[in-house]
Image 1: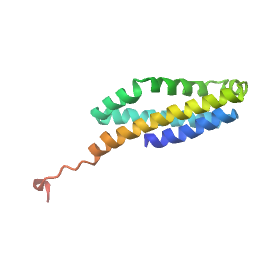
Image 2: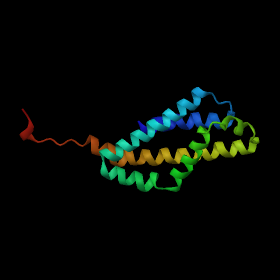
Image 3: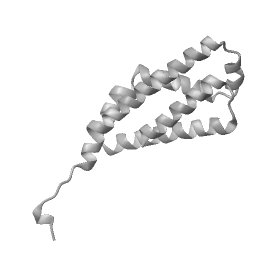
Image 4: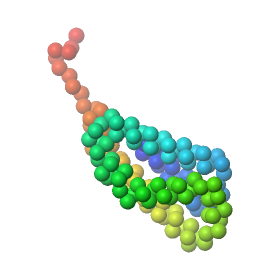
Length: 133
C-alpha cells in the first residue's frame, strides 16, 4: 500500500514539476499521499523489526531519502508555483527527471523489502494439528 501511495505521488509530483500549474487541491493531495506513504512505512517498521532495519538501511538513512525529502519540500513551498514558472524548460526537465528517477528508486527499494521481508512474514502460516478443532 505504501508503494501505491508513492506511485501516485510520483505521478502527481511529475505533473506539478512539468506544468507549474499547481492548485491548492494538488498540493493537498500531494501532501496527503506523502503522509500516507510515510505512515505506512512507519507502520511496517513497527510491525516487523527486520523490515524496519532494512528500510532504515536501504531507504530512510540514505542519500535517496535526502533527495526525495528535498524535492518534496520544494514542491510543498507556498511560492513553488511562481518559482517553477520562472525556471527554464531545461531546468524544469532536469527537476522532473531527478524527481522521477529518485522516487522510482525509492519505490523499487520499498517494494523489494516488502516482497522479501514483510509479505513472507505476514503470510507465514503457523499451524499445528494440536490447534485444530
